[in-house]
Image 1 (cartoon, rainbow, N blue to C red):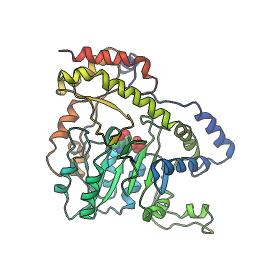
Image 2 (cartoon, rainbow, N blue to C red):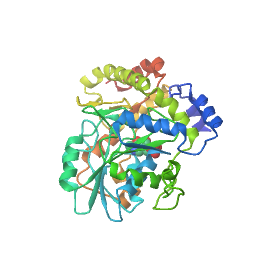
Image 3 (cartoon, protein in one colour):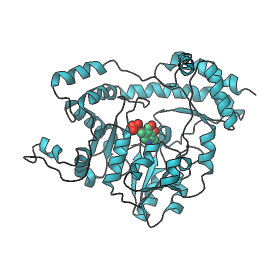
Image 4 (cartoon, protein in one colour):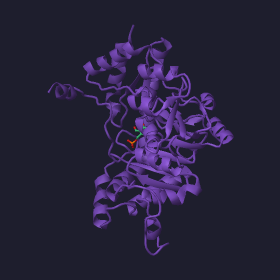
Length: 385
Ligand SMILES: Cc1ncc(COP(=O)(O)O)c(C=O)c1O
């Protein structure tokens, strides 16, 4: 009852999924097509859009980014005891996907500016058991991919991009998700382009493409059968059911059609926050996000870094009293019960610990424009000395 009342008091939610208006039309079309399982006409359109936009040889829709990461762990052949380097400042699935195969996450600290994995600390975490580096482009801002690729090739490691938050963002002009051997995108309802629950695996290394299709189709060569390349399909490898049905793909297609304009509007909202909080930063009351000049962000989220945990909690409470829902994340994985059980740290985690306590994410969704001044003013009031 209490929880319900406090939810009802929220006037400006943290997230509100944006609908383009064509989702139901395309779902009806999928219904009329009588093709409701996966890999029908809408899935094909989504695949073509991803391949064109990211410039990758093969894109495969999945039912989540989590699923795409699980496919990646199978595809790169993670075996029990293999170590996988990744940040601790990330969502659970980045690590869990590899733990499911017996892999050991080795957590590396993040950079103070972008909150992405600190490329200069990766090498020290490499051991003879290291197999892969998983990078996370936090908030749709690119990791330092040139340096990371150089470390990976020096040590014969595979690079996987957790690009859950990074659709239509880029690094030195190259789309994120298209730089590692594999990239994983999310279309969860909190993401820029959404279908409720959804994702995609971007297969950038052509040598992995055929097996990726098999793993996604329950370990069968059904995709080849559908294309008429074999006259029956059979069980050929391990796999699972990683593909979404056409209803989800139809919804997603409506979003992909408008992906550029959605991103443009998000960037305007992001820029308005960034401009508005110049004074807070100058006064030492908050630090704004940093986007390196060689990274083009997709404005996935907007956050502030505050002085300490107490200030962060005070701001969230104060915004809530004004009817505004702001949130924090992540509980660093190396400090979580499962992270301690299945993984280990690969060096000091000072920045991860510090930013996880001080970060607050502000509402950012299409339609917020009408309320954004209220959010800004509420932050300024709460943080005023
Ligand atoms: C960095 C990161 N990785 C993975 C995921 C998982 O995405 P999904 O919910 O599509 O499985 C998320 C979702 O928030 C994420 O932010």
